[in-house]
Structure formats: C-alpha cells, structure tokens
Image 1 (cartoon, rainbow, N blue to C red):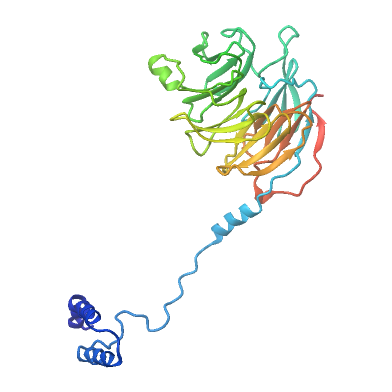
Image 2 (image 1 turned 180 degrees about the vertical axis):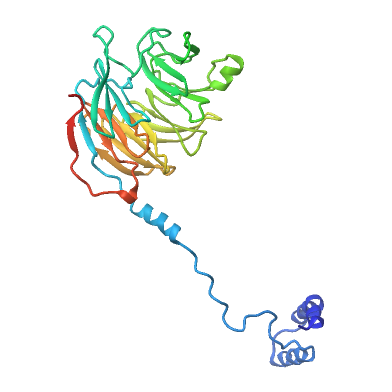
Length: 375
C-alpha cells in the first residue's frame, strides 16, 4: 500500500487530470506526453482494490416465496358453478328485506315465510329455529324487537353486545340486549325504509342505507361523548335505494355501497372526508357487496337484469369472473365464517359458491348438487 501515492491521487491527482483535459485536445503527440507524465508520477499502476478477475457472481436469491406468489396468482381460478344448491320454497321476493346470515359457528340462517331455518354447513343438516304465527309473520329480518319501532324491522347489524335495527319507520335504534331498557341510541336521518346497515370493523362507524336513496355515516363515539346522534356524513350521490354496504378490510376508512335499479353503481367512499373515490356502473341492480379477506377483491350480487354475481379486482375494478346460476334476481348474500365461501339467495334457491377459496386447492368444475333446504 503506497499511502503517499494514494494521498496524491485523492488531493492533487484529480486536479491534474482536470487541468490536462482543459489544456489539451487529443492528438498522438499530446497522448505520448501524457503517457510519459504518468510514468514520471508512477500513475501506470493497476487500479487500487480492483478485481484481478471477473467479480464473483452474486449469491443466488431465494425466489421460492416470490415464485409461490406468482404461481398463486397465475392459477387463481374462480369456480363457475356453485358447490351446492338448496331449494328454499317460501323465500320472500323483497329487495328491501334481509333474510340471510352466516354465523361464526358455521350455521347459515334463512327466513322462509314464517320460519327461520338453520343449515349446519359442517354436517349439511337442517333444523327449525323459530316459527311465528300468521299474525306476526312473515319474518322480515332474523330478529324482531317489540319496543322502539313502529313498523317492520328490515335490517339488523351486530356491534359487540349492541344490536342495531333499521325499520320501515325510517329510524335506526341501538339496542343493548343485556338490560331491560334496551334502547341506548336512536338515529334519525332517513326519510323512508332503512334497508342496509353495516358497522365498521372497529365498531365506531355505522353505515346505513335506505330506499330514500340516502347513505349515512354515523360516529358512535360522538354519541357517547355528547349524546348527539347527528350523522357524520349524509351522502346523496346514489339515485336509487342503497341496500348494499361493505367496509373494506384492508383500508379502514373506505366503504363500498351499491345502488338499486335506477342507479346500478358501486361507489367507494372515504368516510373521513365523505368524498367519493370511485364509481362503477355495473349495468344491473346491486343487492349486496362482500370484500375478500385475503385479496383485494370485491364480490357483488345483482338483481335485474343480470341476476348474477360478479367478482371485481380492486382498485382496477376489472371483472375477474361473472357467476351465473340464479334464474331470478339475487336478493341476499352472506359470507362464511372462514371468509372463503359465499351464500346467495334469490327466487326459491340458495347457492353456495367457493368464490374466495384457496386457489392452490382449486378443483375442476363439477356438477352442482341440489337438495331441499327444509324437510
């Protein structure tokens, strides 16, 4: 190691090179002069710390994880037929009601006229849960409270121990079923039937939609602080009933909503500002929306004229699949507790779709089974 030479190159050598470049233009005579100058200063030595041979090849990158992700995306297949079809005689053909739900214990509940049936998805068995009289029926949602509302209850939503009810009397009530006086808050803002209710995963925000074409966002934390039940946002961009609502699982401040026959749009909202992030015309009545828990995908169910389910990629909103199996408009949709399957109901059938299933376990198409729901 020649520290004197290194010091010269670091402090003076680059200046000498610059002066040479500015003073001389290339010519054989000047090139010979520069060569002799380099010899005089000992500048014809090899580059310091240079590789004597070709530099070693970089260590191989472990691409197994990347290849697995790439393979997973390549083989992402959505079955085009339902896994199972159940006959549901007596299913009410009413767009404003909510008659289907899939509980965390893997029981699927559906109301058929005056009776609520439970289908155990693990054992494929069916039993009656409750039957009401003709005077009280038909069942319009999966729970009825006798105090608070003055008309039929059309929509329900749980928020921990609070059961929120939306009614045809245009009111929304939070009910704490642990206490005798169960009404803890009442929200007033809709002018007609409240047919859509969804709490955000945090339990702070409630989205409500009605057949007055209004979408409201309510902040329950504000109601707890100052007893105010004033809406946080009143959104009037839809031109038909707002029933389909879904909070985004990977972006907590975003809500998706779908409009009815005269609207046919899926819209995305920033609930912090109330701004519309995007709007997509689906060409059909939107009855329900469900986000995937694993991918940036959104499933929509539709009534007239398509009567289908559509899987969308977000945020491009390109259609990944269209699932056609219902012959009547799809009115209700619910997601299995593991997030992989979806149940859709319309006409007199309920169909189970493996729409969000693991693509690595995808199986070839098979004929859908069909059996009665109630025995």
